[in-house]
Image 1 (cartoon, rainbow, N blue to C red):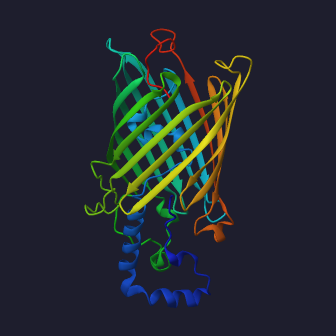
Image 2: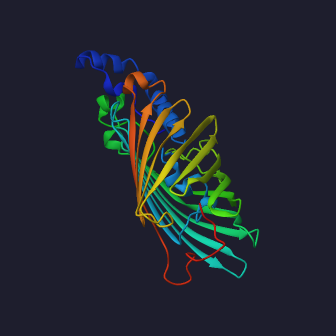
Image 3: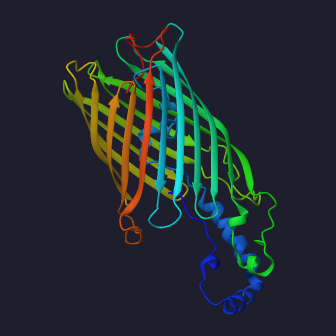
Length: 360
């Protein structure tokens, strides 16, 4: 969850004279208050961005989940708009791309990936931009069944910035500035993640499969402060992921997925399921597949979800129904998400006819 950073003095509604008297009374501790607020803001934003459609952003879950799909090429985009009912909306967009190819002669595969992420939050336009290339190696563990152990890495650069013209403190009323001593309204840092996953079919049926994974994000503990404060760093995050897909009939199947993450003192658990119904005469190559289901982000939101597959494209829509302590203020409204994905095959050296290949 993103957090809106706002100095309390921004919204005081009193006559100007009374406001000036009040602010002047705070002069002795002004620098301390503002500095503490900005430091707390830096700490607050050390919690990672999340999506309700976490399954549509696999690299953010675990770089070792890259390439675990049926296809050679996959491109996914997710857009999230949150908390319009409370304050300035938080807008988040993600684009990730994966390119899977066979390597060697032992049914091994290599997946190249790229994660792009953009997030803009709150009244001071706190903006984060991520560029994170990824690499995942899939080692085949069996010649008779789909069993793969994958090791993935992701690393790149993150830029964070604010619009200082939108920052209002008590100094603004005294001299027209925000009174802060950092010179640059943006900072850049390198970030890295590593993960492992295990992917296998069930009962030798490649259409019934599951995966388990664990990832360790921000292992380099990057500094995250406008003040270049070495004590303010991005806390490492553990993510444990799992998913299973199995057929209910020739024309339907159930997909269950879950994540549990822990970053510093913050924990999040999200889990749910979707029922897929194939439409068309050929159940192996349906014209459409309609999915319906829901997810629960523990103590935070219920997330009803709909998805439509029309090969090679998919569109997914979800909405957060707020059940957290903010429910009275938000009237139960959270945010909506929409995602679009493309999954395709190469014309040459494709995995379309491969008997052994990582898939989910």
